[in-house]
Image (cartoon, rainbow, N blue to C red; front, side, top):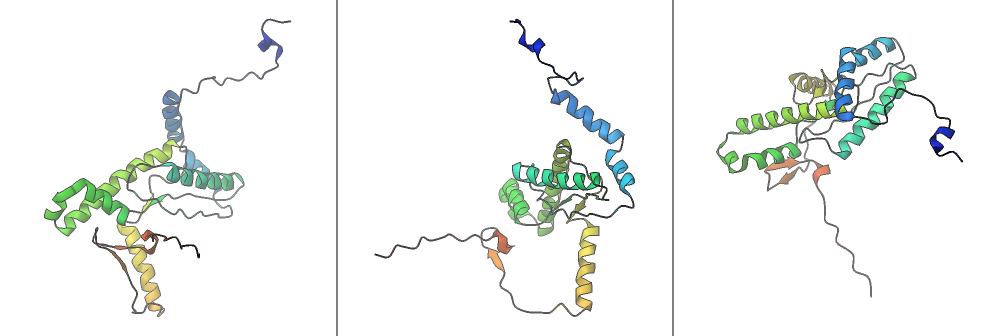
Length: 212
């Protein structure tokens, strides 16, 4: 019997190392993709093809990415890349939601009692700075996951261009007579002193007692 069983197995010869060495190789890979303008070259190669547009429901810019946001972006990246490989013209424009209670709560925690001495505009500016900080952080983290997209020109709900597009759409609804004045209950958080979306309201379920 041969003493070295490895020599008896027919294995392919590859230049790939057995060790990934990601701390060294990942930055090199990202730099190579940026240098060769990989995303732009894909866009150029697919120009004129049938359009496939994936609308990116944006994450909140209120902290580093977590398993949920990472899975969300990876699944979208799978779809966009597969469509491009199938011949479609499928761009990807990432976005961020920079408004809402999740960001306000984080800013309140960081400001503490100092918020009581600040003007509303100062608080809003603090929220904007906080959102910008984590937008940049999440962008770098998503790029490290190998997700391709228009990272240099994403959309953000707090940019003047986005807000102008919202106002333009609202005005179009108004011109068509689809805007009316009515009554609607708005949920209000006494603790945070802000309006709540319906999706942010949770009800405690009371178990129904069993009938004797």
